Length: 379
Image (cartoon, rainbow, N blue to C red; front, side, top):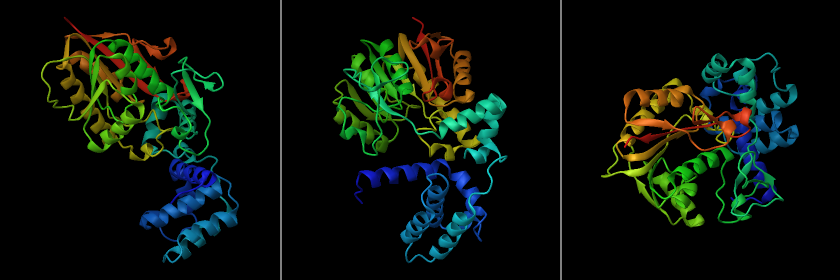
């Protein structure tokens, strides 16, 4: 279905708000449903959430929100249920949210919210949850900075584009990679250390770090374990005319390489807790088991990568997670396990670098949460 500008913008906004506020919407819907929400058909539950998002979050007039949602279910046997639930919600409104647990107020997984409260305290956690639910900027580094556009916070050439509801690539230069300023900072930092050398990039798709690395290094081998993800990388490579990078699909835990690289950059698979504002669906994947599996995979990638760095070369490890288990504890584990690497300082804005590592906390620094550490192999 091809939607016009305003309809497309509304559809994208509705999708986002329905995803972001899922727990809060379910709390409101449960009061008016005669059946447990978990027992409902997925399509029916999605329709209920979309209708509730219009009523509670977007402020759509009740008659329009209810009729449009029920109309989308025309002929479905559950249309009567949807009509009754949404009319009840429209009539009585959302149950009082004041005093509810933070994970319900700000729609996050309860176990993660409790983990953050234990680590950061209640006030800081609430600010983080609120930040995660805000609409992210769209921006990128420009080849020729345009002073008519809003500037980024840390990089001189980073600019923020106006949201129109349309694909921003339709209206901007083809040499621009759309990414959060935090990702650009990590990419720039790695590129500065990679100048003139050979780079193996692990976890390369969709290419946010490649965009910076391929400009600085002699050549980059950009790899990922998924053909599907590397197709996205290839699309970006074609659009942006990357000439210094070779795409491959491989498992970074058992890389099929001989010899070594001047730099190995691991953009590690992680729980994505630092980018929930931008990847609003990722929060619903959270579990302690997911964290444990991510930590295990990261550990394997780090140890395997050590053997691919030439003497004097550099290893960089990066995540978009806020969790100590995926960041500082991985650094400590590597340094206890491998004695022929020493940590070096990553270049970057001084306020974002601690103990030589880039440590970005979302609402403190007003950009996505990211982490990176670097080591040099002894000669």
